[in-house]
Length: 357
Image (cartoon, rainbow, N blue to C red; front, side, top):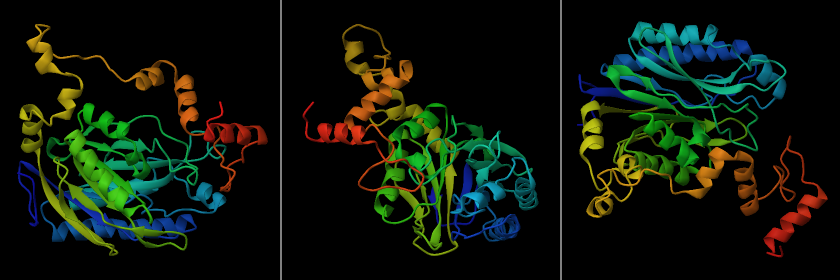
């Protein structure tokens, strides 16, 4: 069974640690390297205290901090693989653990012409990069990262299947379901989330664990970087949506739990009334079988908007704009780097608001 409170792990459990690293404020590559050295020492130190630890997870932005200066963002952007991943790989190999590390940012293929990516790497206990994930849904309008394009599933420690997502990604149910349906048993969500959204972010990870029968490991930042205050509450969540362990707001907080491999596989195979992954693609199988129409239920997607998104993305975008807005800028609250709406767009938005169309 999955459990919390001990420092061990077994053949059936993956020992997972989330480390609540205080948000750094850095400006140069040299400062980033020095900070990465601290993270490497933490990997080795925590393994000493948690001998059963198979995997350690650090928050989004923990390596580089947020480069609020655009030129600093480009100057410190790194290649993957590169010096930083070599350092992290060496630490993982020495400690005999897997690790998830944040690189903000990773140089674009057309660097420096285009903005970097917000990237995570999963490194195994041999020091090898086994998954590189680029944030699909950057936290617009503030984050200027080039968005990534897909999720991945990797066989992780002891064979547990692992997917990576980042921070604001987790506010979209679609990404959780995509990872779970590809086979992920543990979804790791490093984040650099700040107030005021603490309650919402704590809740969404628990809800998505429940809805997707998946373990969730959240490593969030803490502290104040001169712009935002980060609320911490890093957590490890069971596949039934109940929290196994959760930090408070402290710097350098640690939570650790043992996640059972057999338990999640047994639940997915044998649970019935709350087996969302099965029931979604076998809709109404009880009634369908009673009607003599087979034992598989209904497989077809019933959701019109999702069908449109796949077959006609531009039309799906227009449908979204019909119920929200047409422009990326908002006249009443301008954000640096985002163009304000034109007067014609503002009039159209007002028309929508007043239901005059």
